[in-house]
Image 1 (spheres, rainbow, N blue to C red):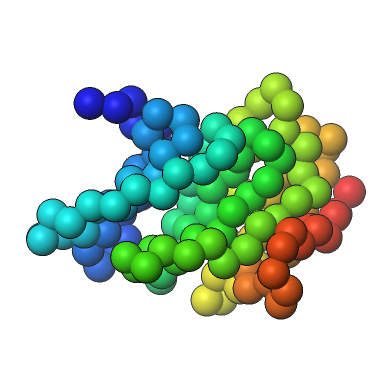
Image 2: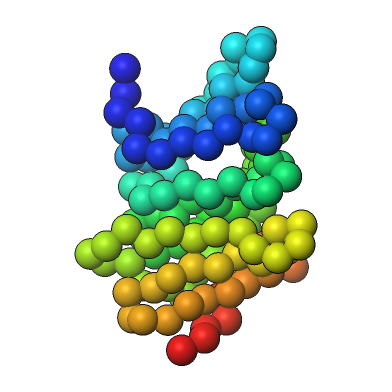
Length: 130
């Protein structure tokens, strides 16, 4: 059994999302018991689920935040950069009505915000508040 470092359950109880073995995201669908794996290239520091349970973000030790869909055809929706994470675990979260933005702390004493729906593919730089 792999080590589970973080987990979240969707509000409807249909999906359990867990972070295992540092680089793996396991999604389990209930009650069917169907499971699938998402592999990240870098270690995952934390997981946060949107309020509606349709998407989630993971903070990676590569100083990126990845936004994913929850359903079975999980596709990465966006990548966010700009926060600093070297020594400590940085946690990000969804905020606003309908989880319309992502907020993240940073080791350089800043708070970063970005729209949770990036308008372009690739990495989106978060807006900094000092």
